[in-house]
Image (cartoon, one colour):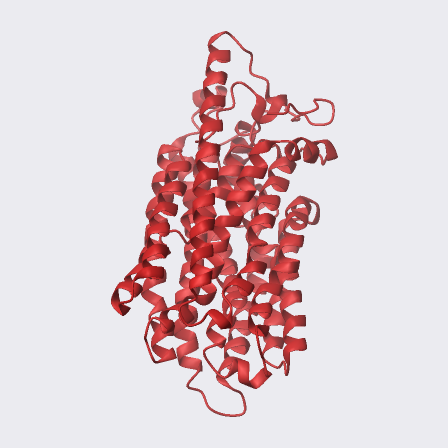
Length: 487
């Protein structure tokens, strides 16, 4: 691990006393917080923040992926889409999405979370509403390009915000809830598409789909502005005593996140030189390849199994997402509990690999549908845990911010490929796309194994250094012998 330039990158530790009414005085002297009071404050923060981030995630994901449900209506005919124009429209959103992800995460503290997330919500909901009234392929492409640019700040920035608020062993259980909203959005999208496709009038079913979902997203604008604090220690919905507890937690957690840290290009350079970043990014590309292919083309895949009604295909996606959400909740809980990531990432990828192989080879409709359930286990577990694994093992806000944005930048660029691999010419079974998913899953399994080995060997070296009397050096970031990597 490259050491960080101490001159340009050093936590600013301040010796200031913090008065906390709910904290045991003896524990305070040792920098500890009363756990009962702390848990009570965290539950309140969870209730206020996680639900908002979950709602933002749910609607942004729904507005980006609903083109898959629109395809099952008169969407392609009304816009005159020919050849692989639908696939291009599916993919082009990621052209701007991936470019802006590392930009927004790096600028999060500078613009401030409240203004960045609120502005993003205003723009993406407006674009979604506008998509309901496009008339041709060119207008659709323009909307998808803008949608990608504006939505790029939502998921990576809310994930980064979690690392600014919670301890390392608290990230995943919170992100589990946020990602579960994504599963809800996918299942809800199928139900909503089913209902709106039955509306007859001046607007077609797909137009109602975009219009209603865009208006639902717009309802989150005032909530984001008034309820998301730039820092939880400033939250108006916390009491003075509760804010003091969070201030004490920030002081205790400064070796992982220092709110006073200033931006330095040296911080970006040190993480770019770290091989772990590139391995994690390659792994995320494979992970997101399967995520976007399955979430976007699941209705078409299910219809291609032999279900003659597109309405049936839409409704049959709902229980699949339910299984994906349940498996993710379980994995996220135990991942934080035992403070390990690799076994859950690699295990879920292996299960998903089985699902894709069965889906590719099984001729029976029932077996193919069951394979979609198996593959869904790898939808959310690896995508979430891999990004947060990067956060776990990179110290310093701007290094972590850039690393998370970069990994998701590489991962989400896979979305630009999916539309050209799951082509109309390969319908209805999309075998070419399934071969691609199998290859990408195998690649991610290999990368996860390598990252696990690196973390394990480096931890062993650090334990040896500590045993030999190595001092605690927070200025070295995650290169500090006393900084343990999550495996």
